[in-house]
Length: 244
Image (cartoon, rainbow, N blue to C red):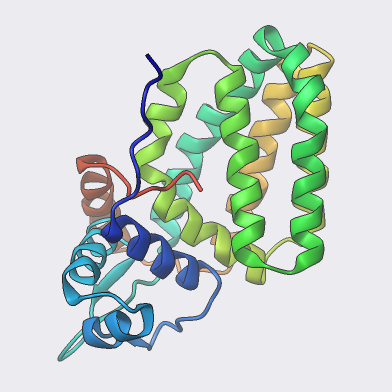
């Protein structure tokens, strides 16, 4: 019997729509996200909007605004740095194992992902670039044949998308990112796990350095980072598989 794929709920769809707008820079840091306004613009009732906003706040994407509503939470350098250190290890492991276990599939299907990524860059769409980026990294996770890599990284992907939006809007050029992706893929196809892991780690470290150099390194951010990390581990992202 064919297994049925779960369909996204209305709250999941609202979550995705709001997060996509945030990552594309459509909400400034001072902009308020008002439940009623979002419900009207999306053509839905207030309940799924309320559920989506609560999840976004719990995942550290939004924070309470003074008075009424929510606003986009600022990125803190310490939290981003810590998150990307973990991500570098996971992506390095995935790429190395992919070179050991998935060379044939990488050679067959990988070039089309690179082509899609470059097409997304040419389109100028932040949401398309992030979607193509995520697909590339989840492709490497799958090639590793270690399901724990994707499962471990999944709770952080909503926040990662927020970070990636900042990198794409203000950091490295998207073309450079896909040059790095192609180098990782070539190492995987060549069956060189050491080089694949090194390139993947360097790729993530470069994205981290590009962004954290722009962020204020608040000495009080450690407790905030711990709080966000705990919230992110609580539960699942809402349809986050939609990468840097």
